[in-house]
Image 1 (cartoon, helix red, strand yellow):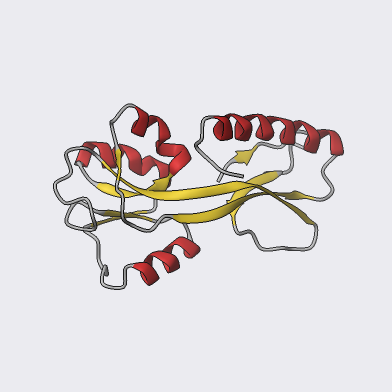
Image 2 (image 1 turned 90 degrees about the vertical axis):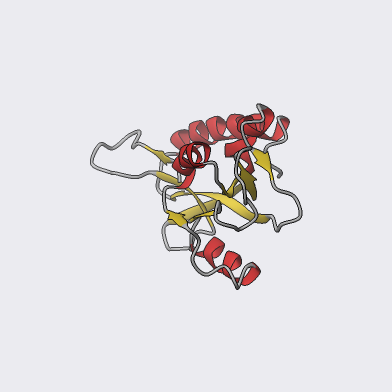
Length: 163
């Protein structure tokens, strides 16, 4: 989740969040940004990357947990489970392990051959949304959207995300 610090009211603690599958609530605006592919990657030296002893489960939220359980019902207790999200890449590289990560976060590691994509396994796709209060000044929303659109545009241009 990306948090944008308050831009106009220092008493507020959160103006905008970026997340998978937000819940619609009164007073919130939700805008789809892009689709995120979560793929299985491995460090090149992992000995058993396809859900063996080198596999680590990274918690990408309740939807991913559910989809993971449905696709891998026999995989009950991976050797390592992390709620560290993208911080898990460091663990993966140092431990010679494998795990599911968003393509956009591992793209540079794949290009440098520091990680490899494991083929023949499910790829999970989730829409990503921005969520913000409907009472934010339009000028703030416009600036935030311009910045996010620039970042998303570069990800799309590099092929790291789809629409």
